[in-house]
Length: 202
Length: 103
Image (spheres, each protein chain N blue to C red):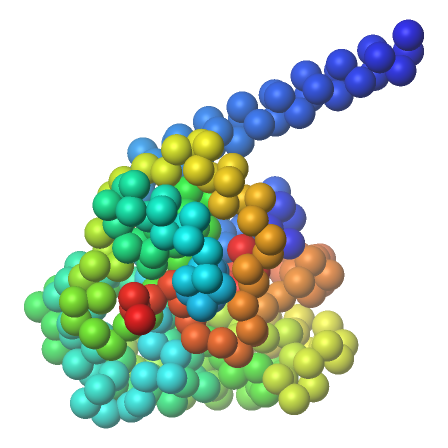
């Protein structure tokens, strides 16, 4: 008897959770174009990526085409080595800067406070922009040391990003390729919460 | 990780959210795309959006760049459930940043 009651309450719970999921999905459809981040800013949901797009005419043309087609969120990274062209395309476009959302990333090889400060300025200089909309740590470890523990280093790097955020250089800050433990480490030590985790898992 | 991020209100941006090469081998997914009158990449992008993931799409082809924005349709709950139940099509971590291009 107890067993069947437990079973039925479990079914009810599952059903309620599935209904909740559906309602959340429906509400997502109401705002298909933008996602509100926890810092109150709106991020265009569909993002144009530039990984492996070569610096120069190709990257500049591709980003111009994307902006003309209607993308308002462009994703690059210091490691993609095309920040200059991406920035050029954004600066040359007819769309006001504040309507474009630009994401770039701190190289996974930079794991010190001072290194991060320098790298943030380097990306701003490459892009030729006054500010970056979303700046994220590309990976919790340098790729060649994948899986190694850089918890303390990531907290230091995050502190540099928080300061640049407070200085207005980075509107939002986030993470990429972080797993639960890596994210929890930042949450445990941060003043400003990450707004995004960029990931390949579906 | 996705559930954890949702609980923390951390938005997931997805790259390689769906491996097109794996998809191309699946005629039933092609049939779903045909039913909606969309391409496979468009179906994949919409699927990511339906899951609250902000997808990163990539192409150097101006036609595909524009097509990848045309995702203003809804996937039925039944089709989402079907796609959810497919074996994990997680692509190579260093694979192309799909969904993009029709190939």
